[in-house]
Length: 483
Image (cartoon, rainbow, N blue to C red; front, side):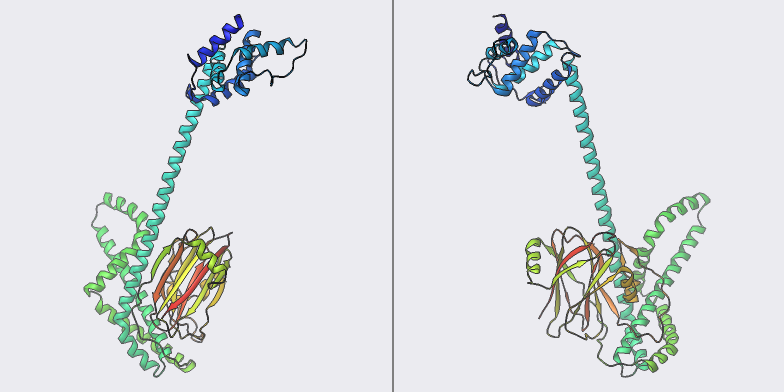
């Protein structure tokens, strides 16, 4: 009867009167606390803690009740005649009555706490370690989130800055071309009478050189202004200013010069110098173009200079349906772009169309994408695909957009180029930038765009994987035109 009284009191202590379900205890879920208590008991019984035979029977009874529920004679294992320990364990188990498994877990924990003074400090140490680990994990996750957000903001700002600078450069070049077109056209007609294609090539070359000379003059003007300004500063201001200029001049020179150039064009401050530059260019090209005229010829029409409208680009979410349609043959095709490669899809303008449309997506990874327009009469109406590695692609791309296109992920393409090339080399058709090459996250949604025909020529859709050292990309694309 003494044993029955002891176990009943332990159960009452564990669960109260009447016993009730306890979801948490000591800052732990009850089941987790029970597992910690049982592991502590198994590891330290007979070593760090020494319990009496009666106390061990009570703990084992609670353990049996928590694992199997109330004692049931039909389910209890058969005992041998001399199995005194097994009989004592069943008696203590039976004395627990109909208490629930949760109450038995709590009774085990309370009884072990009563009998062993080292158990509560052990649980407290485990809780503190768990809380400290949780705090570290939360802090690490917050820091990672902040770093990721900062990186994304920096990348977005860099992309916006680069795109803004590219737009300013295009606007400046278009404005200069518009100012000089008539004068260069008259000069080209004198050099190549009756040959519109050669006239267009010469006009394009003169406008390109005029743009570079204009930017060089502007750069020299800015340097002179900075030198004059710094000359009037004190020694202390000089030191501080030089440190600041060293860190920021490389990043801000290009866009500042473009803004100043646009302001200069609007105010008409550099018109006189532009006229001198045009005259010098035409004089320099006089002898060279005469040699071209003797060696080269051709026929065909070439459109007059036009202002190219910007492209329209948007996205849509039905990427899986789009991939299925393209893979099933309801589209132009699927291409695997190797690491370091660039794929150029040449799409000639259609005499019955007025606008080109494109759609593309990839599997799992992003891809670089840009569009150019080649001012040359199409030799075929078929869409063709050309694959080249990054080195080959740099060699074959027109020099004009080599000097103006900068992929922000790949760095600046060489700014200083040599001469116009060998006079005996075949002239390349001029190429205009419609959309500069930037990396597009087209693995989450379909990228869609359109552009109105600026004239007769060939669209160059470039899919750039040159920045990827190891990964190949699977591209799904479709192009069509609107009447």
